[in-house]
Image (cartoon, rainbow, N blue to C red; front, side, top):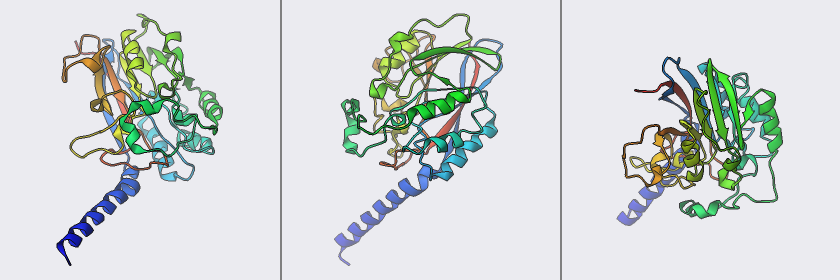
Length: 313
């Protein structure tokens, strides 16, 4: 065989191998991430928060439903889901089935764009330009959003879409602020903005898409923990390098995991020392991917268990 054909065949074989891995293997290789987050007042007992995001569920994905249901064995004190639960108009019963054993635990949620509109096919190169976000899901087709909200709230979970609330969880007085999906520009933080109540033990900010225009005022108001999803951790990453895009204006170094955030953090020098009182930002890489782009490479689907502990002195 001519060397050119041999090399070409090897490249095609490698490409098919990567494609198979990223569509058939890695999307089922769920991971549970664990983080310690020092944000509680002195003398507080640890509080375990299960953060879920971007389930993008179809009823046929029984493997995903079963894995999520198994997370109830972690016995978290609080569940937070940051949106994009649906992948089709018939998915609400499957989502509620997946969360069934978690719905008896105190919980809060916000919605993402794919809780309103089904995913659509688009040029992947557009993800390198955040301007594609505006109006990309505005199709005539709608998902049964209210059925999803009703299912969550009937179980006692609190809808944080452009809302502010207080919950007592694990003996702690928690203040929450949340917004509707910033990716669709449904957010209205101004309507709920205001300083954290000093009587609360902790203020937590919740959003689907971690846009700076949401993170900055939440942190400025005193939220010490910020929770988001949307990025899929980059979804298709370069091994050894990480995410190439975040699908919002968050930098790729924060595409998933735990980092620090404060107003102006996006303009700070790399590895800059966070100021006193800076928030902790946790971005989930999510549990799934839209059926129109089901790939995951070097970025396993995940849930995160955050153990909140006393703040360091």
